[in-house]
Length: 86
Image 1 (cartoon, helix red, strand yellow):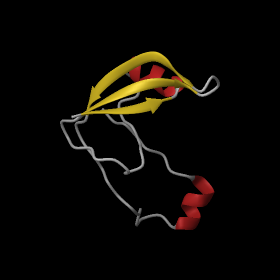
Image 2 (tube, rainbow, N blue to C red):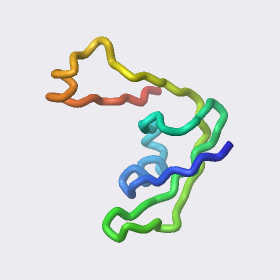
Image 3 (tube, rainbow, N blue to C red):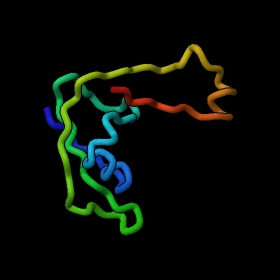
């Protein structure tokens, strides 16, 4: 299955040059290992697609509704970081 998602220019560039090898999205759509995500670059200033797109294959999915090892207060104060490792 191919799933279309918009992505802003900074994120698009990082995926295109290979430095961004992850994505973080709300779990509001069906996605499985082996699916492809078609990332379509979105210009937030013009509120339109740029015409550039790239397709990436899903190799791993982490789904969670809570992070048990941090308090809600800590998350609200500091936010979260998501790491990509190689």
